[in-house]
Length: 440
Image (cartoon, rainbow, N blue to C red):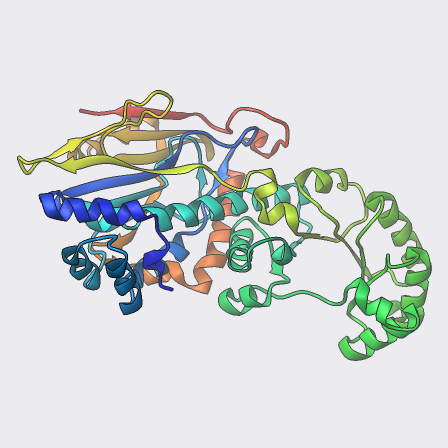
């Protein structure tokens, strides 16, 4: 199946009707944003742009998919022919991956004809809603870890394809490795993993299991110590590997006190360089509670791949400007109760003072007016959007492995620009205010 059918049927039926009445070729601007951050969150993190660009590059139904549309009379033959030759020729401005976003931040702006923009709605929202949710959770988790490395272990807790996307988004949010081999292969993320409880249980003794693992993987491996008794396991592991044992993993119990006891025992046995990794349904709150424990790294699974309680960022894709019958661009906006939108294209800026972010400015209005706005009014500012696609030409550098790790580095720098309360795990207001200014 191609990406072209990863969509809601009404995207195609709207295009079908618009091709019939002539509005399909009107120039339009759609914007992606969220009306609010998840409850208690102080910022969101953008992820998924590289994946979106790859989908758009190959967004065209296969012959079999076109036949499916034809056989089920979903669209007319005219639309079938239009889809056969589909290529996105428009322009996309977007927040770069790793950037912070807030309520009403124009995270993605899609400009082109009504038809070519409309068919992209579902795939764009599908990617951004999930990837941003995972990256946002990953950022909170790694911030709570305070420099201790975090590894993605959530593959078995998500759909198989979502697990790969989650591994990628986790990197944007600061994770350093993944247990998912498909993600490692696709994105170059360092792979981690040693043995599960089953490996210990299949052997006649824990010593046999450790001897087997250390023989196969070397003394620098990490052994799982809580199948039976952590204390006994540590003693056995050090006897087998010597003080050069690479690490131990604890996957159950009171992790803080067990890590403390393990550290003392390891040191007493001369294994002073042996690392302690903890797992077991960790999230940012559990990791924050382990701040004073002698833990060297964390493995995070379920809570990561489910957005730590917020598996979506509630992004929406809304038409904000369109070409009229007079050939001019006009703002359009919904007035629905609780779902109103702001018309006109947007330009997003972040205001700074002494290098510290003070607020987000979202300027709405005609392109020439918005672009000529006097930035000095707010002092030091930076534009938040980059050009991802320019009249159909995709910036391929945004889809590379290098771009993924550059996004992680960019996120770390940008997070350090937010007020310190952004790192609080308590419910509170967004880290910085957002102001929407309409210029006409």
